[in-house]
Structures are given as structure tokens and as C-alpha cells.
Length: 248
Image 1: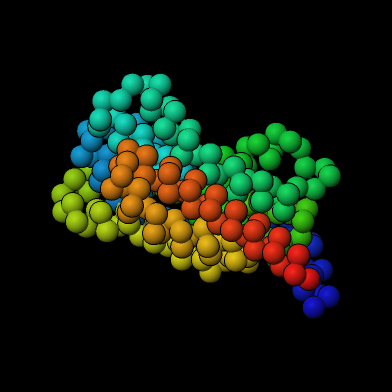
Image 2: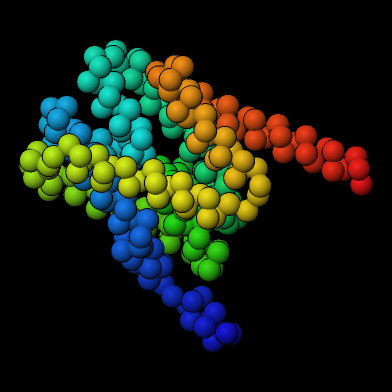
């Protein structure tokens, strides 16, 4: 074990960057790439030029945010409305950044580097990093994550540029199934990686509340289901903990 740790410590920064880059062959990355094929089909139907789709893939990294942006374009929403919708959808990434950045940071890590790396934190990168980063020496974690994040974004930018002309002939059901792979995988990954009962409660409440909120307020169903599910789970967990401490 000591010799293995010594070898890991002596690996060069480039070696750790490439180790992270090899994550492009992991299940989370492959599922995300398949989902981007479905997203590419959506942009073709929306009439968005391929150059803009490639730019959107790199600059608006989280896939749901891009879907919201395309939907806003299709609905004829104003720039301010689209900006607000994308911003609100991306607020959910803040807890992921808050959880992952302390795992990447060392006393010598520059703030600008952490800010740059935070751009690559979405659910796929977060799940991948949280499962693997603890096996990486702390001083190399930022490099490891940079390798994965940069490679993942660059690969998907190239992917949408290549398949843009091809997906125009996809049946809508095929594109929809490819796109739906991502939320299914996200749900399964979060459920599997959860370490606290409140996470399971929030997911369960959100799954039940989602269809109800869509029936009541389809324009804000995800927002209401997410905020409501998370708030109810948090309040229930606080109440359960208070009663447990009182009985003890």
C-alpha cells in the first residue's frame, strides 16, 4: 500500500490531468454524450445554427439550462426572460460547487483556478468527482478534475458539431429517449450516492410533486416541485431530529 501511495504521489501533474481525462470513457460521461445527441436533435428542430449550438454547449454547460434556453427561443421569450430562466435553473448547481470545491482546494490553490473549475461542475462532473476524488492526493485533485471537466466539455462540443447534420433524420421518439437517459441516470446516481435520509425524502417528495405541479402550474412545475420537495424534506428532517433529541 505504501509503495502504491508513493507512486501516486510521484505522478506528474500532466499524468493526473490525463487520469481525469480518461474519465470520458466512464458511464456518466457516455450517458451524457448520448443525451447531447438528443439535445442536438432538439436544436436542429429549433433551427439553431450549428456554430451557435457548439458555442452554447461550451458556455452554458449544464444540459437542463441549455434545454431551457432553446425552449425560450422557441417560445419567443425576451432575452431578459431567457436569462432569468437559465439563471434560476443553474442555481441548483451552487450546492454542488459548495460541496466539491473544498475537496479540490489546498492552501496553495489560487482562487481564480477554483472559479474556472466551477464552470465545469454540473451533475455528471459532480457525481464522477465525488466518487473518485478521495482516491487522488489532495494537491493533485484540481488537476484531476480539470482533466475530466475540460475533456468532457470539449468532447461534447465536438460531438454536437459532428452529429448536427445527422440527427435531423432522427425520429422524435429516438431523440427523446436519448435525451431522457440523462435525468434517469442522474436520479439513480443521486439515490445511490446519498448518505443521509433527507436526500431520499427530498427525491421521493419531488417525484410525487412533479406531476402534480405540472398539472397545477406547468410553467413552474420543476421550480415548485424542487423547492417544495427540498423544503418539506428539510423541515421533516429537522422535526424528526428535534423529537429524537427531546426523547433522548
